[in-house]
Image: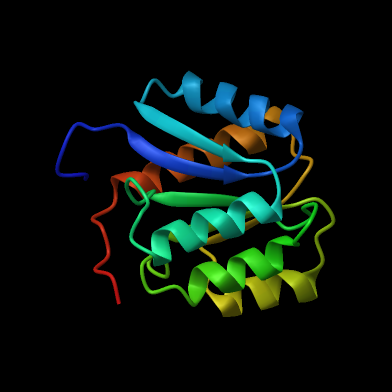
Length: 145
């Protein structure tokens, strides 16, 4: 469990506002405190990574939810930047992929994502992903590499 009662800090990197609204709704249904930072494209995501690398970010998220198909820079570029940034490499990443393939899933798991889920999902599937996201946030923090 988190050592404090602070809300889980979740970063969502997704350009589809409807997907973000649905995820937020499913998180709300779980009645567990959280705060959501939404980044709408790959450029904003890479700026987020850079702020952490430079030590100017406010605090680490417990999980990053990443869409692979983003404008400006794709999600794979963002994922690689996260995993090669020591200040973020330990953060769990959940991939929500619009067009999933078994080869892509294998590659994402090899890179080190926690969960790879195809979208669109039904509400039951999205509720399960929301629960998993909050469960990840309750795990003991991993030490930074």
